[in-house]
Amino acid sequence: MYQNITTEQKGKILIVTVNRPDKLNALNKNTIAEIGVAINAASTDNSVGGIILTGAGTKAFVAGADISEFAAYSLEEGKALSAHGHAVFNSIEACAKPVIAAVNGFALGGGCELAMACHMRVAAENAKFGQPEVKLGLIPGYGGTQRLPMLIGKSKAMELLMTADVIDANEAHRLGLVNHVVPQDNLIAKCEEILNKIIDMAPLAIGEIVKTVNACYDKESNGYTTEIERFGACFVTNDFKEGTEAFLGKRKAEFKGN
Ligand code: COA
Image (cartoon, rainbow, N blue to C red):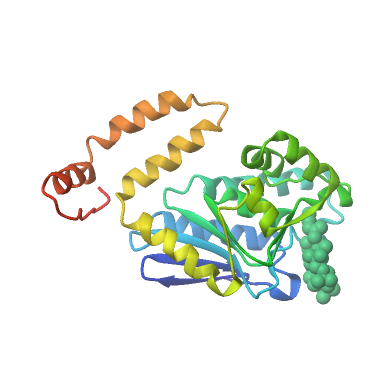
């Protein structure tokens, strides 16, 4: 079904792997489109409770947008490429199910942007992060100029975006770009551990967390108003009824996501 990604479901966890290891998993247009299809399918699939996004092999998560594909692009083609990336990466950010980037090596350019579009990032010890676009006469085009300052602050984001410095996993952790740093062999297990905790929670409430936290960074939204609305919406769900009844009855809640 897919040419540039693979998908594997383990229990309620879907692992989406960018699979172009000979090109260090560089993102061509087709790969971005396939990631979008996989995320959209998982969003409406009740058997999926959480998603891990990773890269094939042990060297790269994603080494950037595929430079060979856009080298001769025009202004209009450049804008269309960026807009397509934005649409897909926004759909990852807005996914009502938790999405964790398992960063197993280079996360450069579009790779760092892809990781930043996920809800959380877990890095292997060999992971490297950077936005080297200025070396190519470019700027990030898949949300990097917006999400990097949101995650690490304007000052440090300016430095990384302007110097094209590549930072290691520990520095990324210190800056708050990644949630955890683990040995490469434990990378997927650590992501599964986090997702399994989330999968035990009320699924609709998790979707509301995504919506409400994202509203904090959306200039069109008032996040506090969004919180009032989404908090209220939880009260009419069966999950809320079940959660409160289970607490008061001193038993484990069995959430159905409705
Ligand atoms: N786009 C297209 N192809 C890429 C790529 C990218 N972003 N990143 C790596 N590749 C390809 C290389 O061209 C090479 O292909 P080839 O074997 O057909 O020549 C292959 O992947 C392996 O990469 P290579 O550069 O030989 O590996 P390395 O270990 O020497 O260096 C990197 C690794 C990540 C430092 C280096 O590949 C690199 O700088 N990549 C580009 C990073 C970048 O600028 N990303 C932002 C793009 S906007």
